Every structure is written in C-alpha cells, then in structure tokens.
Image 1 (cartoon, helix red, strand yellow):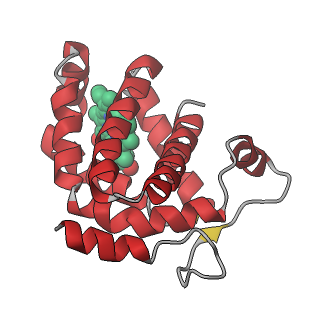
Image 2 (cartoon, rainbow, N blue to C red; image 1 turned 90 degrees about the horizontal axis):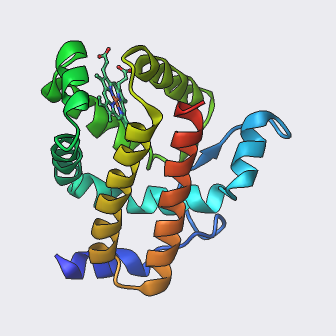
Image 3 (cartoon, helix red, strand yellow; image 1 turned 30 degrees about the vertical axis):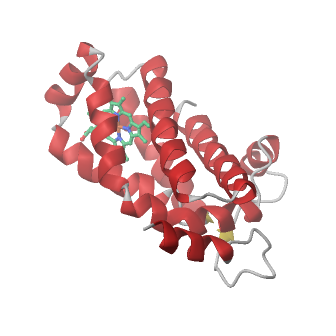
Length: 177
Ligand code: HEM
C-alpha cells in the first residue's frame, strides 16, 4: 500500500503549468466570494493539490464518515435532531458525497448554491454553530490522520494539509453565514 502512495506522491505538483489536472476557480473578480477566498489565500494551487489527494480521501471515506457519526454520540441533542429529521444511513450517504466533492478542484456557482442550501437545511433543523464547528474539526482530524499516513514526503504533506484546512474553512464560512 505504501508503495502505491509513494509512486503517486512523486508526481504531485501544485504548479498549474506542470499539472494536467482540470481545476476550476470561477468567482467574480472583486466580488464577495473572491474576497473570502483571498482572505484565506485559497488559490488554484490548492485546488490542484486537493484534486491530487482525492483518491486518498476516497479510499478512506468509509472510515471518515463512520468516525463522524460516532463522534456525534458525544452530544445527545444531535442524535435527537438526526432521528427527528433524517436517519444516520441517509446522512452517511449525503456526507460521503459531500466530503468527496470538497476534493473535486472546483469552486463555481453550483458549489456555492449547494452550500447555501445546506446552510438553510442546518438552520431549519436547529443545528447550533458550536456543534457544526466541532463536527468540522472531527473531519479535519480524520483527514489529518489519513494524509499523514498516505503522504510521507513532508513538503507534499504540508501543502496537502494547508489546502485541506482552507477548503474546510471555506465550507464553514459559507455554511455558518
Ligand atoms: C443534511 C453536510 C454536520 C444533521 C446535510 C446534507 C449535507 C450535510 C451535505 C444534505 C443536504 C441536502 O440534502 O442537500 C454536513 C457537514 C457537516 C454537517 C459537511 C459538518 C462537517 C451536521 C451535524 C448534524 C447534521 C453535526 C447533527 C445533527 C443533518 C441533518 C440533515 C443534514 C438532520 C438532513 C436534513 C434533511 O434531510 O432534511 N448535512 N452536515 N449535520 N445534516 Fe448535516
């Protein structure tokens, strides 16, 4: 397994010219979304890195999602919210898709529209920002563990963590608005 990661990692680049990956950063110059991205220095380089580590995330997605829901057991009110509005099984599927989408290397109008919808849903079910933020940290903890294991090259690991924390921060900016 390690060998596969090593081979994959050797070709990693955050340089757009060197990468043949198709990433999209489509926001209006000077608009609010552009300014929010500038604030956290999220650039196409980060999207390239996210797209490169997507396979690693996909390989471990089940573990990430299981851990996410186990973690919610710490707070009984969250389990009540889920039982009243949905089910663990249903949410596991939506979360699995959502996490993988974060690594698509694409930030455009549909990306923003989907997050606005998720924000409305969470507002409607009464999910408090403190629990939402806590759940994000749990996601970050899981991703950190996976990237640490899968990316032995320190420089690549650092770039991957930086890009991952930026995309999670953007998600939080949008959903907690
Ligand atoms: C719905 C993501 C935290 C409860 C959703 C959906 C997504 C999502 C993608 C589906 C939206 C749709 O149907 O289009 C996330 C992310 C979270 C998070 C990324 C944090 C990292 C939580 C937490 C709870 C929760 C902590 C605990 C109560 C729900 C419920 C729904 C939902 C009950 C479904 C509502 C319905 O089906 O109408 N979430 N969620 N979410 N989420 Fe979250």
